[in-house]
Each structure stands twice: as structure tokens, then as C-alpha cells.
Image 1: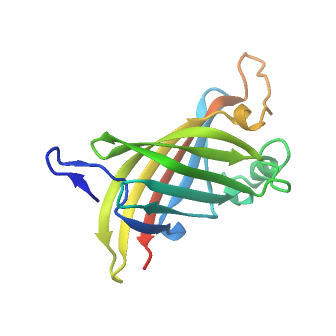
Image 2: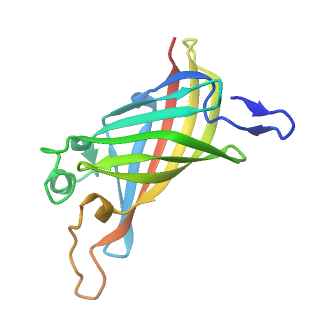
Length: 188
């Protein structure tokens, strides 16, 4: 990673080059409040993406997630999440995130702003990224780690299914927490 020699701060999220996400060593996970008392967590099993970092410090990032690969550990719930009430995977099989706006915040943290598309609705989404480091794996490939975190509102993407609770409140929370832990391999 390039650094500012006077401050010793990381100024790029990934070193110059193209870095392909390694799905077998990465995860895309989420959590949403349920019954106003706990958080239900899940993940997407199928995704890919890359980071392209230029000498200028500009970073382009893309992620593609197969919406049908959602897994909360409960198949009946997962089928409902795949339905038209939520992701409508029959009509919108892919979730995408594309960014050209990465800004260093200091201490290895970055502000990443991009366009998140769910159910065919594209919205600007801000994430906070943390550089996880750079290393060489046992097979000689360079790897970089990045963790991205953010919150989104399902209603911003046309998902408004919910139920009122008898004791007050709603079955589902208004925000979804999203975390992506990424291991990316430098392409040759």
C-alpha cells in the first residue's frame, strides 16, 4: 500500500494493480433486527468482484452478488427472502455495487461511495472500509484484505414488506447492517 511518508498513514486502500476478490476466503454478510429484540444474520454464498487501483490513487471497485444465494440458515425464511416481497430474484438475479470514490480517512480507514443496485433500483451508498493489510500466500500470490461496513434501508430499494407487532413496533428493523470481509488476489 502506498503511504504518506511524513504521516505514516495509508493513503490507498489497495496497492496499484487489479485485485480480484477470492470468494472462498471472503464473506458478504448482513444483519437486521427481528421482533425488536435480536438480530438475525445471514450471508450471500455467491459473489465476485475486483478493485483496480491506479498510480494516481484512483480506485475503481465492483461487486456482483447472486441474490438467490442468500442464506440465513433457515430455508423457509430464505425462500421468502428470494420472493417478490424482498429480493425478487426471478426478475432481479443480481445485486451490484460500483464505486470510483474512495477517500482516505486516516488510520487505515476509507470512505467508499458507490452505486448499490438492488431490485433494479440504483442508489448512492456510503461504506466505511478498513485496510486489512498485504501479504503473500503460500503459493506466491499477493493478497490484500479489506473490510467494508455500512447500513442501508430496504425501503430505499423497494422492499417494504413488514408486519406490525401486537405489542407495538415492527417485525423487522428499518436498517440492515452490511459487512464484507474481502481477500483479493493480485492479477498478473
